[in-house]
Amino acid sequence: MAKACILSVSGPVLTAGEAALFRDQDPWGVILMGRSCVSRSQVRRLVADIWVATGRETLIFIDQEGGSVARLKAPEWPLFPRGADYAALYEKDPELGREACWLGHRLIASELAALSIHADCAPVVDLPVPGAHDVIGDRAFGTEPAQVADLARVALEGLRAGGVAGVIKHIPGHGRSMADSHLELPRVTAGDNEMSKDFEAFARVADAPMAMTAHIAYEAYDPGVAATVSPYMIQEIIRGRIGFDGLLMTDDLGMKALGGSLADRAHASIAAGCDVLLHCSGFLKDADEILAEMTQVAEAAPVLAGKAAERASAADAIAKQSEPVELASAWQRFHELIPAPESRA
Image 1 (cartoon, rainbow, N blue to C red):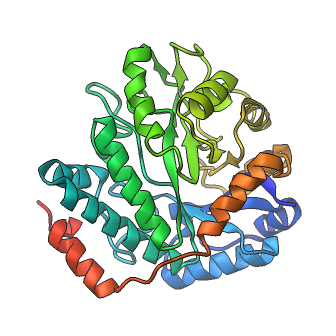
Image 2: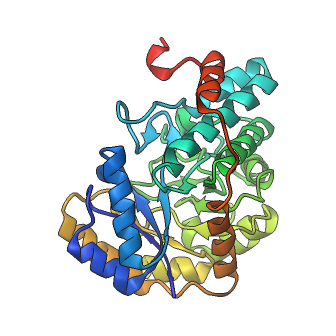
Image 3: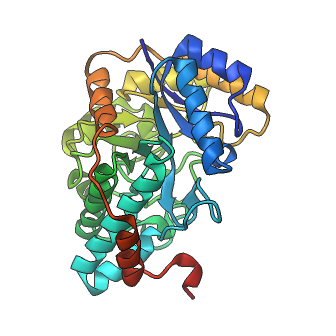
């Protein structure tokens, strides 16, 4: 039975220790970081080795938003626009903005599916505000809920058309953060009237297959407690007010916003209502240290069961569905709408 966790790989090849961990613990998913993506043939071999270790076609995740957040990098892979680029076109012509965003994400899906990667930690549904930390910045599709949700929806549809399940993030909203949750726990002091805009953007795409939590404390609701480990934020806000009923995964448990041991973080996240634990070891370089951290998370993860297992199955099913696309024509039209990133001033 698969464990309710998504683990990572320390480099471009699966180590013997990682293969043994995957075989013994059977993580539901595996996420590839930039350190594991060198070439197309190498990534395909890595995915095949992961599948051998787990004994099944484990769902493979990646962060491929476009812009600065892209694990598949040029020149081996195409560059894709930032969320802000789609937003700029949308603000001139919403129909063209939607078309470009759908095409961009359909083309991302085609790159991912060719590598047997069928889950993308995108799109960003956060609403940045003036003066906030720039960790979201130009990754966002704008600052108004209706526009951001409109573009997020077509992004999800473009990914899905290529057999890739999207993950909306960072629910219930990271745009007001004054700090980077990779480094510390941000505390958002906005009141309910302000936060309602952030919630609205996510509510408009609440039928997404998966969502990633924000390691942020919202002082108006559960002071000092990150949403990832807050039963109130998950049950009352994310599941209740926003209405999200898909698979809810944590942001990376290795981020410094969360205190305590990795096992403590894992247990608290599941107890709060998260379905799946995500661990990327983004701060570590040493393969043995990464393996040790992943082992802690995997051992703390429960077996995927009940409603969480149903949600996971629904996300898995998307990987088995895709619609054909004529790639040359799609790329041509895409670049008519948004010039290739390397050619932009």
